[in-house]
Length: 325
Image 1 (cartoon, rainbow, N blue to C red):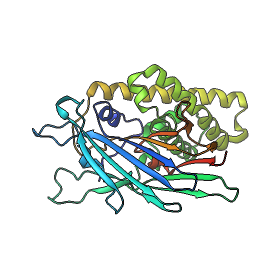
Image 2 (cartoon, rainbow, N blue to C red):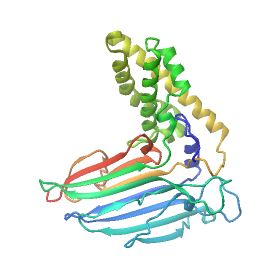
Image 3 (tube, rainbow, N blue to C red):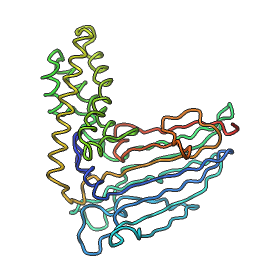
Image 4 (cartoon, one colour):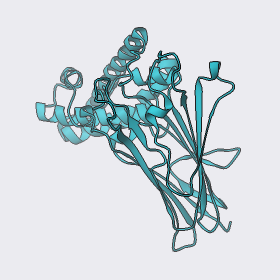
């Protein structure tokens, strides 16, 4: 079973910065609803000298093997000592077909696991393109977490409870537990995405990361306190309490980040590896609606997240276009 991912942990980010796996997808949708999917997986090539700072790409990914997929492998000639492996998978889908699990990720077996132990799958996805009654096309991709549910998404952390007890004494213990769990979930989404994941930014530009984190948490903290306390706090009192919670929470995240950076990566192959996902879709005609971002140059719709994001709930990526306009 994978090691626990703490809600303030940045161990995975360290793995990312040292060259952990990345997955980029490109989906070209045709006006009739058919599409071509290309997935490029990048990560460490298998070690030839027995030394490794983390899992290789082959330890993590499960490229599609069903009929119709073309899969190629090569080492990146630009990488030092050809240490980066590139796996590319491509397939055309007819209108009405559904894609399954080209983002499948594996959790490497523990070091003491019996030889031949089959890795568990922690991530999966489905993608469909359908024609809506008004003639528009809907792109819909759902990314699901299949690994064990991290306890910090269901159980309040002692640090979070202590933080709330200090900053918002009006909360009783039951309310503290509810608010703490919800804030941990909100923080998880802020760190892992989708949208603009802040985990890497907290490593590379801590001050900017702290600012962005505060902006993300304001609405969540205010809403939680309003639900938990209602009229027990005036608007001014709630704003003051919200500010105290956010300052304490971001300071805690920043301190933990700094300690993890100073400690460095463990090199344990069984650590939960962070995989960066970049999902792109090129739709025909005019883009009408999306929960992603439109590339101003290519017109593609783009979503960015890390592999742990769906642990907080299914990640649904949508875009609607008018193929005739």
